[in-house]
Image (tube, rainbow, N blue to C red; front, side, top):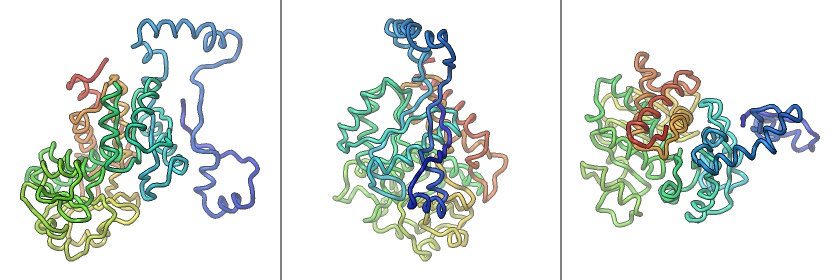
Length: 403
């Protein structure tokens, strides 16, 4: 399968023509952004007899006798399912499965463009955790991995956990782990640039959804000094009686300092701010952070702290936007992570594989560090090969590789 940009020019009405005239996004998306392409020729009777019947029967019989051969003689070992229910589409919210398809197509072409991995967008018309898990588990024999996308929290945590228990291929919720990997990579380099190890940093995360929880987990795994996570009601702490199970777990391994109160309280003296909430942080609170602060305000399109404000107080500023330096973009992680996992036919993606991806990503620009370069560009051709190799090696080291 190949993903390619298409722009068919069939007949269409005046409204559509007007949309395309004034907004090139509509012109680009007309007809969708993907197409299926054969990898073998079917030019004559001999080709047909090999690609389909009777030749295909030999391959089917071989796989029936030795199921592992499916990786060698079908597309399974190089194709990922990109699965959503459309309940939490970035910047748009709960827009449903059909409206989410342009995003899923976009994700699929990024897999191909940046990682050489084919991907199929699948938008599900179901919302219950067990329904999603059952549906995807039944589809799993056709794929080498599953990328969960834009499924609302806290359901996304349970969907990922239950699905991984059901299938023996990698399940990866990119909104969680892709964001976490890229954030850690950028933070490693920002800390190095300012002469501080991670173990000396106290971080504050604004947002306790999928991304915030995953970032907190990977920072703790990486050895951060301390991290406090804030939701709309303030710091997530063990003394709160309004926490769901995910946040209760979060409170158990974060906030070693025992802070309580609003976000502003957590920011006093903090070294790092990481925003994945979409809220707004007042400048007066930013001003109370430690000297040479590191501010990653990643809400898109409006960062929690505007870069102009952040630069007044921070040594390094990162955002989720492409029009500012240091863009925290998941495309730096997920194509290489899946390429590495598929390369060794991994059964899952472990914490060690995620940490290896972050280290490899940081290393790409380790000799080029500056306040405006703590993370590579998505178009840096060194990124995917470095992440792929690191993830494959980590999978072998952790015993989840099958080749």
